[in-house]
Image (tube, rainbow, N blue to C red):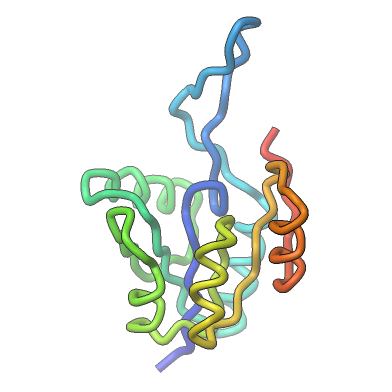
Length: 145
């Protein structure tokens, strides 16, 4: 059995492109890849890991996630959704050795169960407490623009 790495979907593998109308910034619905994370996923797969997506999304969203994975030829073994519930039980069930996510709370929960985490910093403003928490994890900084 190959070791497992789990990864979040939104703002980790992809982000929603936006359009600035001059008055407001609107989501276009188009999902754009985050290349640095795609490269990491491919590297870890070549190293012998099975990669699973674990997302907060609902059942109805899974076809969109799978279409994105196929479109970008990502070596994902399976997609798991939690419907906005905690990801930690799923990570534990999969025996994840590493989880990659843009959520500090998810990283904290996984870490509390002995799962190593990489925090994806999307450049969203953090207060000092959040910065201190983020410093506990290996971090990959990405630009969503």
